[in-house]
Amino acid sequence: MEANTEPIVYMERVLHEEDLVAQKGLLTLPPEIRQQIYELVVVKSRNTITMLSNAHCFQSEVGATQPALSFVNHQLRREALDVFYANNLFLAEISLREDLESARRWLYAIGEQNVACLRRLALCGWTRLPFGHMTRRQWVRVVLDLKEADIKFDEGESYAEQHPQLIRMVDELKSSFQGLVRSRKGESFDAGSLWWFMEAFHLSCVAY
Image (cartoon, rainbow, N blue to C red; front, side):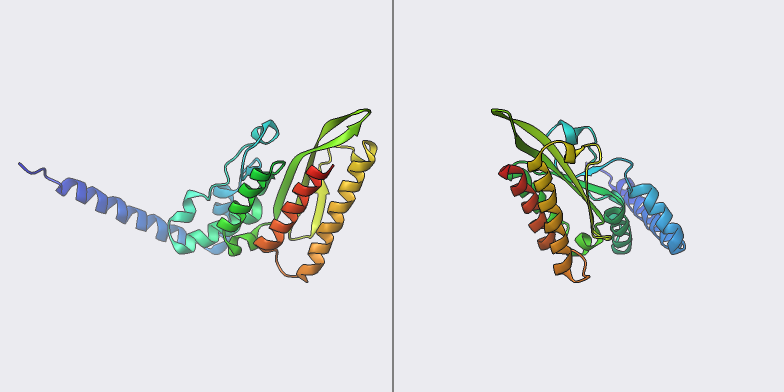
């Protein structure tokens, strides 16, 4: 005897129709109200992390997966992702080459339109500094404000009081970022330019 699939088909149709009603209900709201809803739904209270390599990142881990709301329809996707990428802090630990490659894949995977929406990007990693006859590991973290063209190093570290090589590393990275800003001539950063600075940060970490 064949199974009766009519109830299943009916329920699927009902769920689909309810979903359409919910979508239309949200899209009929004024843009400023939708904006507030998106901010409540997709903006994280902690750092958003693109990849995970050590305890420093693990303590603030939040996945950088695109929010479920962005898979409902094209309009909701665009509006939700604009808010998602513009308002979260995306953090990449790139001490190792494989970490850098993971960051590169993520950057190119999200696409140029979403890259242009990024505002805050944090890069962190380990470097080594001379310490007597040995070396010591130093954690370095930098936050880029891509809209204000600003670069800040972790305020929890008194870099200027720690080591001359670290001061030089900081100065070189600041100079590289400002040079990158000038080369953009007022245009938004693209994946290629951000990848270039990520690699510069990684090379600075391994060089010292």
